Image (cartoon, rainbow, N blue to C red):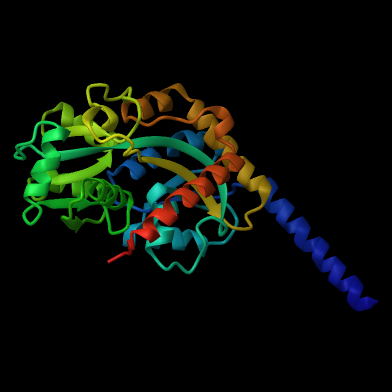
Length: 324
């Protein structure tokens, strides 16, 4: 009986400790772990959100870039973190969907995280250096097929979103090119601007300023409708490759078993941040579409995350795509 009472007392104490932790959260800085280098799309979103979230939560929000292995190093770091809400994962379709089929991960991308909120969605765009002679997608496809042994296509990391979208594009047109991986989207884009690679499939948000400045050429966005941030770029359906739809959606997660109260405090801060007029304008300028309020819940992120895994994993595995 004494042992039973002691066990019950310990359980009550532990439960009270968790409740107290959730009630006092946050009491110190929060770290958003970005899986790519500074200057890329994911990093940009995290930095736009960090200051409004600081105001909402009353604590500093630090952005930490942990790069490598297509984002798996960063996601693994958050999985192993204490489930206390102080280390947060920001990621996207590549890091939290594609990587699960590309890599043999020691964790489950769907069940080893607690979803917090979806924050944005951004289609991709097929771009090239200006020296490529093709002026539109219908000219680009035969040019690629005629020069497969000469063309270099960049990626923001092996197994990342740009790599997957590039493979999907090449599979559709029946071509094989040499991929050149970089440690993040920003270095890959710089390589394209410098003429080191010929092609790149990246997010509209990272390319639009350079396409408008006529530093690189855009062929089509991988979406069924034109984008408000870049209405001058045709869709793949309009340009001659219907159905090549991919979108890099971003979400925020915390480690599994993070108390629900903490998850909801983070969610409330994100919802408040996404409602901020200045944040919405900056997202729009980058071509990022903020989900409607009903889609900003943890449950909505989980449902979308699972649906994307169910859609993409069979396709990736059927094609035999694996990290190099």
